[in-house]
Every structure is written in C-alpha cells, then in structure tokens.
Image (cartoon, rainbow, N blue to C red):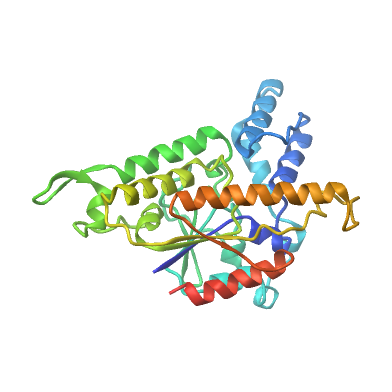
Length: 323
C-alpha cells in the first residue's frame, strides 16, 4: 500500500503558514532576543530558547512552544471554515488519494481540516512528548504528526534534544530484541518483515520498510535526524540483503526556480544576484538527489515553472502511483 509523507511546502503553497525562519524570528522578537538565521533549523531554535531562558526569569520551554503553536496559522487558514473553502486546495486533493496513512512533519491541523473543516484534535494516547504512536483521525483518514502537533505543545519537535530523543526511541523500536520461533533471538523489524509477527499497531516507523512512501513538500533538513536515520538504516539493510525489503520510497522535489520571495528587489530576468541564487539552488538540488539515490530513495523532479505548477505535476504523478 501507499503512505504519504508531507512537509510544510504544501502549507506554504496554499499560504496557510509562515516560513519557519519567519515564525521563529517573530518568536525571538516577541521575547526580545537575537535571531540567527544562518544555523540549521534545530540550532536556530536552540539558540532562541537558550537566550530566553537565560535572560528572562520565570519563562519556561512550554511557554515558548505554546507561543510557536499560536503563531503557526495564518489568517487565511483560520478563515477556512467550510467544505467549500477546502474543495480545491492541495490538502483536500492529497487527502483524497487512496493511501493507508498520511505522515506529516507539520504541526498544524490543515490536513485534518481539509477532511473535516470543524476538526478538533482527539486524545487517543498518553504520549505527549514524543510522537511515535499518537495520531489523529478525520474523514476516515489516519494522520500521524511525526514531529508533534500544536494541540500538544510539548510534543513539537524543535531542538536537537527532542530530535535525538525521538531517534533513540525509533531505533529502540526497530532493533528491539524478540525471540522468533525456531530462530532464536531476532529484531522486531526482522520478524515483521518475515511475517513472524504483526506490525505494531499505530506505529508509523515500520511503514518506511513495509509500504511505498511518497515524500512531498519536505525539504529534509539536516536537523531531521530520525527521518535520515530511517532512510540510512533501510539502505544499509538493502545493501547487505539481510532483510527482505521490497517497498519503494520516492522523493518528489518541488524545488521551484522562483527566488523572488527571498530577493524582492531583484525582478529583472538577467539580475546577477538572481542568477547566482538559481545556480546555488541547482547545485544544492543535485547534491540532494545524489544523497537520496545513494540511500535507495527514488528521485522525481516535478515539472513546472513555479510551485503551483510543480504541485499539480506531483498530484498527477501520485494519482498514477498511489495504490
């Protein structure tokens, strides 16, 4: 079966949220501390959090995370209140695809609301800090917020501490020792793949080894340790042929060549700065493609001159491949 892994690109395309850098800069300004955008996403957050806690007595990590959760939604998203509002959105068209489950790194509930405009989060687990088993259901779709969700501010995965903790728990689950009948001790993943035991219920991490996973709207930042580990570990098992892995993982790249948002004063087609920015993006894209393919991830470059066209191409591709 198919599983979607969706990132913040789908929200940005619809104007439902701010860019991460903008959101964190707003939080830094709100708390009166410096903002440094040249670091990785996780380190940027760690720096902001550390400054706030060091200089402002009484402030807590939970308060900072709640402020981030409050700033996630734009006015446009808040105004989406009826099924008619959602009808032609990218979210509604993605959630209509015939998939087993939807994984998302997004903290908001736009995907759920595209299925149920009046959606409210439901509390189906005691898990509030990490996000291995917690899910939401809307319109008969199961959605896992793998980096946490706004309804649980303490679950929002921002700094390296939480990313590392998530990775630790994922690795322990994948390589957890079991005793297979007639085979002595084994790992849980091996037993699941060999059909000696069932996949743990409500556990999305096994989908990376059992189902076809299609990734869209996700930049795969270096901070996302647990996702890179899953891809790397799966690749190592394919190379060694130790486990019977037959699924495919495909990364759909919507790396638009538009740079106007970052360079508003550079509108001319022959602008030297714009051409330089395009060249940098081209090199970065080639490097990501090479890295993903080294990890046995198929790479598809979505066609189109801008994000809307590229997402249309991605949807067409997914309609043909999701089964």
